[in-house]
Length: 237
Ligand SMILES: NC(=O)c1ccc[n+]([C@@H]2O[C@H](COP(=O)([O-])OP(=O)(O)OC[C@H]3O[C@@H](n4cnc5c(N)ncnc54)[C@H](O)[C@@H]3O)[C@@H](O)[C@H]2O)c1
Image 1 (cartoon, rainbow, N blue to C red):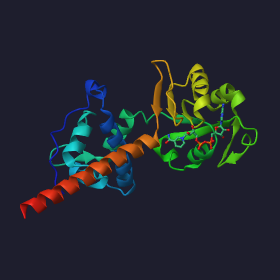
Image 2 (image 1 turned 45 degrees about the vertical axis):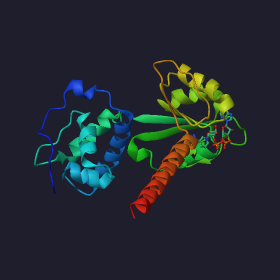
Image 3 (image 1 turned 60 degrees about the vertical axis):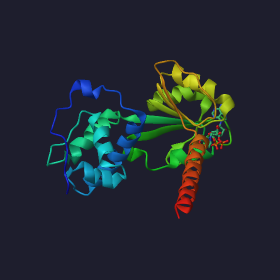
Image 4 (image 1 turned 90 degrees about the vertical axis):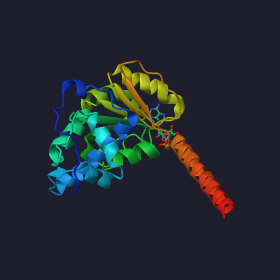
């Protein structure tokens, strides 16, 4: 294996508090998943080149991303898989037990609640709430949909510390306010609306339409660039 890591350096407190750029943050979750597979396969050490190959990210980028953690491999030896995996998990806040309440048990809420992949990544769905009397009481996996009227009690009983909003746009802000009043400080919203939260609350919005538009933009740019290349090639003939 080709190993070209920087010399070992301790992960200092200052490094641990450095702001990690969003793109690196997203890639760290990918490294974490790959490291989990390696751990399961009994792999003890990994070079940045191997991690790059396993994740489809180029090696300098892997090294740069990991440098945000202050976690450098040892030249000629690489990274210890379990240490690096624990280190990334800690930086991502995944050593905490995240207990997720999903508000809105429609198509999306039910699909999320039934997804088995969250548990292994540190997220346990502990509550599913809805306002529709036909939906309340339904069983999704091992969860029973609770009435949103008693959201405050459900959040307290289940000790939820993170919430997902999968409700229509017109009710999202009111529900978001109730979540915040209950002390929830991490909210992921699928509702197609801009939500207002106090500064101490982390709000992330998932917008698949925007992602598709970005994808369409890149696909179009690639097409335009292909056409330009072909035109240049014809001129050169
Ligand atoms: N971000 C994305 O990429 C993306 C993709 C799909 C859907 N969405 C959005 O996610 C939301 C959910 O989509 P869906 O397809 O699951 O819709 P859906 O209509 O199937 O489900 C919405 C659920 O919210 C419930 N609800 C309505 N008012 C409520 C309230 N006050 N309290 C609690 N529950 C309430 C409804 O009873 C219903 O069960 C919508 O806002 C939709 O636009 C976003």
